[in-house]
Image 1 (cartoon, one colour):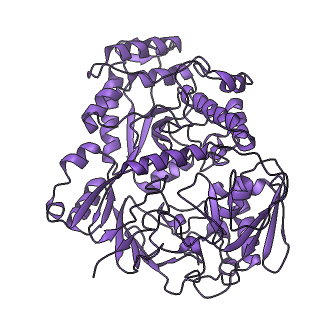
Image 2 (image 1 turned 180 degrees about the vertical axis):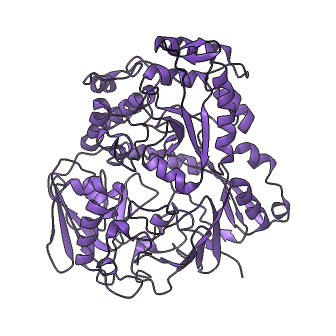
Length: 604
């Protein structure tokens, strides 16, 4: 990757935090909409800048998933659905560019218009839009989809619907949403709800339709599947948007996108080595350097690529459930962080080549700064009374000396445990009543990397007199338990963007903390977190937006909810040599919307 990519990416990342004042006049109907300012691409753009408009069609790509699935309906609460499916079925009114922090361009909608302060948004449907069965996409389908998803669908759709004051048809092909709160992001979120075919669900309880494969207007349709084994999405040659929607030009070129399922990571990797699987992402640098020399790599059938991105690190690690003891005490959580010997684990797992996640927005301009809070960040934080220890003063993750014994870390942990009422008694950490410190670590079967990390963590915990129960369950049981918030500690991953917005309420908001299927796995209920998310959504200056993001980062990180592991500021991809992608990478890098979306095959 050329240095120019980094320069361009840094310039684009800077745009992510550049907040422009809202226009005082109502916008005219437009081909796109940006969170702040204007879309980068003009109304007559031909294709997105990171696609190949001349890409050939044909070929296939095969990806591996570890685990199982029992449903292909990603829009309801029921069932275990392959995570990729919702990105490829259920086309939306607008599509998100991966080369701008938060900008949408028309897909099902030919234009978008907003009120003077974005108190409403109106979309006009393209007359050509149709579902894969040839029936037209109507305003009635749109209105039914929004109301049904917002009242009966997956929790990810509920928050937006609660902000809708009214929804009305304003013309033959137009629909308007009026909002009940001041939130500039809502106008964009309105363009991203999946549109389903109303007639398909007539006479069916929507929330119980896990055995239904939704009819979509998207370029791919689910053509074949066997529950628990594979899903085959195939390109619809009669896709209505061909030659009509610039956002789709040069995308969905591969005839088949297939997802194969395996019992564990080892079996999935073996399938790639033999060619059953044709692409894989590698998150373990040690394995990348030591195990990617198999025959198909040596003879040129497989290529390797290391691709950078400019997204925040997000948070990856092991989350502690604060809804119940013992993790409802921040001192206990702090002690758990001291026991976790990251430097030793990182050396063992990656040869110390992966940097640690230091905060939720690390690797981006939105990350908290070192040391005490200052300026506007300090002003925002001082508005709240429930700040965790270190949010204002400054907090950084513990750093060990890298040796297996981690004496300083163990000593600091024991000090914090004692402050919380736990001491070592006859070799066992226990409270004043003599009850031992007990908790369960819940893992999904087949995750060998997480298992290896937890094995080393368990050895460290033994040094402070803790013997946790490690439970491994299959993917269906794992999802059921996590959705029910039935865990003490489990693996956690939340990806964050350069334009944090309403989704932060889903990840960290008080209202979602106790909901079934909540993304707020740690159970944080914080006036400061809720308030700072609100400031993100209403900021009208660059200074305030940055301060709100950095303040939120401080509060979440100092809350000590997650034991972070390493971050991936690059993507390591290996793939069959006949597969190709454009040379120009978007600032989001390898992200949903890039593979397989903009890839193609050069096989004869």
